[in-house]
Length: 97
Ligand code: FES
Image (tube, rainbow, N blue to C red; front, side, top):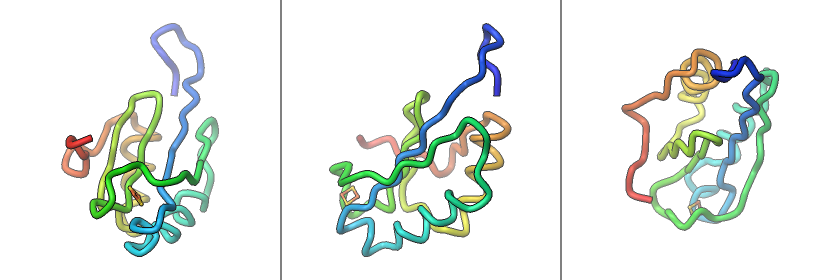
């Protein structure tokens, strides 16, 4: 995706791998993001995001979009809508952080 200045937008996707999110299936969410990589999108496993019990938590930067209770089957939607079409998935956004 291009920015307003026609520069390439580099995104980072942080996927919590803390204990609570791991218990909720975060490693499968991570694997789903790592499958079929998208250019200019870096997938980063990270530690606890202090939102335990609401995971698996995923943050997309630089937009600072937080997604919660992400299921591996929903990752393709996030990739297609948010990372490729630049349209956040409103119904999955987390607003309590
Ligand atoms: S373990 Fe993921 S938010 Fe704490």
